[in-house]
Length: 479
Ligand code: DUC
Ligand code: ZN
Ligand code: ZN
Image (cartoon, rainbow, N blue to C red; front, side, top):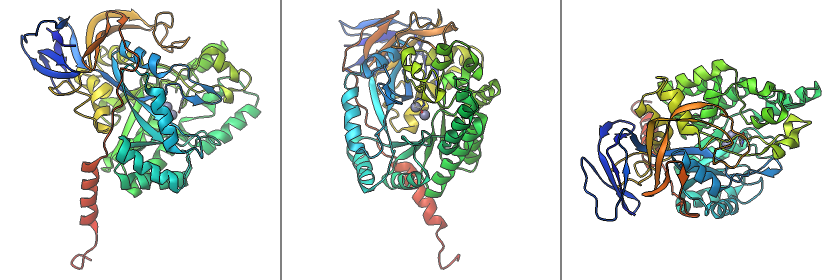
């Protein structure tokens, strides 16, 4: 398919300019004024609209087996919902059970993801440790395009990585030229607090945030950052929800450490009052970890994005319906953790970020697409509008308005955490691999059309690190 996007204003992370874009064979072939199109070309009229790189959501969990159930949004429905909101690529997580071969788990997730309608990549979680895990990490980096390993510092007794696992895995990731990522919450503290709160008779969803205060997140973020510092490995902290973890990141970045931080659109916009809703289904629908926080944390997180100490936005899209959440009716510890948002991330961030003056349009592109592509080393194939880049593009109508609702969303979940939010600025068209897959409210997707995107290791970062280490090594002269 050849597609001409005509008359729009291109917005990338560093430029805003008027030009047409011609896409063929999945790539951006030319960019210029008044481009001619070969016969048979489909034209998208982008007059009065912005043309931006498609969103990259670096944090999703499609069809994740978790807490005794399975997230009901699968790779097909989830990537389709993403396209409807202008997100053209996801990075999902392979999460092996403890003692399960990580290679076997990776193959399982690859198979599940074959039905994706948009491009995808994987982070692989390290949930246990032995020599086979170490060897499989090497195979994943060298033969399968995995350059990021995830560690859950929470979920004690299940997938939690303790300090010994963190040290072993971070060290191995460094040898392989990979980046490490963490879910930062002190799992031992969470476990203790959950027990205490439950024993006090607080059994409903309001117990969830009480058992995971910001301090447990700040402590874990700081610990992971310092372990990464000692071992000389770059680190990415997922879903920062509070001032404490942002401060840990900011401090380390000010010291020159390669530390990156992600924030969820939901943590920027939703506060902890949702857990005090007396309707169990509504309160439980918001149970995710880390939990939503008191409002003052939202301002801190916006400031983190504005200052560049947080670089990416994500959703942690992980869908459980009311009947699944009901498993924790009498015990908040049993409520499956997860909320949705892949379809709405761009529009809520545009409305509350760009329209409110918190972010420029270019910063919006950076935090929804470009920075994730750069941090995970797939730039400029993804994350920008440039000749030769993948034709993953969103045409954005800044005048379109909508009221977000579970009644109309395409996500496979019975609740929308942004229910009733009115937004101005929405995707009018989405192109994935140069094909128009979403236009004026309708999806036109093909099961299995999504490609697996390999993420190469970080040669440049590790070269720089080696040079620094050599310079610091004592010699006969300066000893
Ligand atoms: N947090 C969630 O809320 N769901 C999935 C995993 C996670 O860390
Ligand atoms: Zn997490
Ligand atoms: Zn997650």
